[in-house]
Amino acid sequence: MAQLETPTAIAVWPDPAGALITLILIRCGLRVGDATRLPYDCLVADAKSAPYLRYVNHKMNREASSPSARNSTP
Image (cartoon, rainbow, N blue to C red; front, side, top):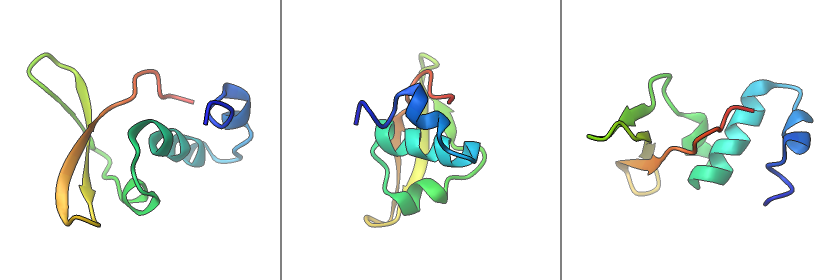
């Protein structure tokens, strides 16, 4: 996994959206279907302003959240 998320490997993506989805899949553990259905406003913050990724886990049919990976911009 470390090889897949290196800046060099991420830079190979011709589309920035593909690079971002790859990082989300790796760092947050989402399934491909859940990651590709993320809404535009998918980040929420807790009481200490820590970011979380809010998504619908379609396999379990429920809303879920995952600690958002910091520095996840490709």
